[in-house]
Length: 139
Length: 479
Image (cartoon, rainbow over all chains, first blue to last red; front, side):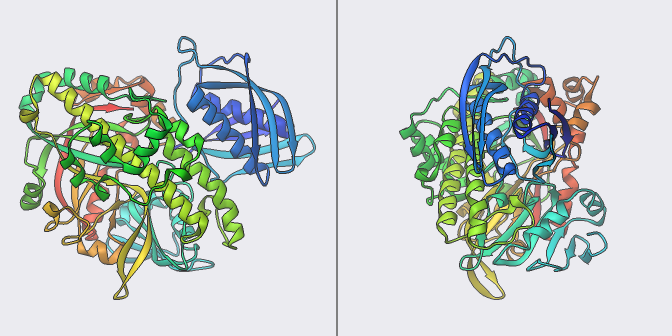
């Protein structure tokens, strides 16, 4: 199970992530992003969404993955909870995720994320079973 | 970086050309400000911009420079149209984030007794906060008309007056917009957000003209002491954010395709005249127009809310646009370089156009005084109205600063604000503030920002702009 740490930035915020696999890295990064959006939220894994993104390397896949989840949040008020199914091939990934639509009674939205940036971006496997990533959000 | 820095004059420092820099970088700041600037990586980012092909003159940074993504915030860079590039990182995610200043026929005494209900009325009238959506739900066809027509779309649909358009940069529309280059994701993100403030540092502020530095210029703008003004600061919302994000994906490949070496992926770019460059300019201009329409609609709701709250009519309010500037934008402009007029692609990211007197793109009313430059500060101190100068035309492609710039991270600001009744503190200073959440108020704490007076003194000291008026906040709504 991966873990994330929020990194301070003068105008914005970032995430430092440690994970066991690339799937775990993406799930942990998404959980970190939704923690920034909704710090106190308990998000139920009750609605499924399919996601397909492309990218030349793991950093680009990470950015595009989070961008797609941010789009689902911004347009469909969808909050991510977990990865249900995951397929990763060179240059693309397909996933099914579970989460729920915002319920104003339970979900107090704290901030919105303008975009996921490439500033100091890093997403790589350091050793078997050890992945690390660093990324920053424009808030 | 600090060791290399060379002092050109009291308000200008140069990072000499080294390594892969094609030109030197220049930072406008006082010596005192420079020490703070060098604490983060913003100066290094200004030097990185100088790597990009076709850059003309210098990679500039204004005194409000701070760490951005790719380009620093406060960065200005111009590129040759044949050899140069266009970079979405040189515009930023909030395309055409900008500032509109409105003047009224009211003075402080007219609003003082009703300040709280007035702020409440503005808070109700202007949708604000995280994910704010407006009362307008556009069809895709209508949204594309907004992207083509900008502020004129809003006027055509009953939001404001035709004369409002005369006092907006570009008259509120960039003709190069082509919504066909805007993605479905971007259209969807923008569809319900037209006429909304958004969150973060965006605001509507009731100001009072406290000081006039240049009486003839202030008179030309219709500004006088003790007058009530309104400042609107917002941008292109989710639509612009998505246009930038979409383009970065394209530009990462384009940089490889055209063999452009990048010190930072966020500086990805393409030749201005390449397909990728042309398509970005068309999509960016569409987002620019969305932001122009956004501020025009908010202006309309501010007018209505003020008349309702104060029980006055259109004539008594007489709210007119002083000017509106964009501070995140790239434009094709003609500038004189080494005595020769050249069309250039000028990027201003957290920097304001500051054209000097007699420029043909300035409204006729301001042609003698230079283009108004609007510099908001934090919600507890003051904002400034400046004008552009001939020196800015000669040195910085007609550009100046854009605001105060953050000093504290959001986390630091939240810690600093813990246990404090910020709304009460501001009220004790005569400022009524409302935000959509306590966290927003805390994150936007006045001391989280640099003192904008220092920024303005540096651009005025460098001769890039002239001080015209100083405004103090009386009421503010935050996103």
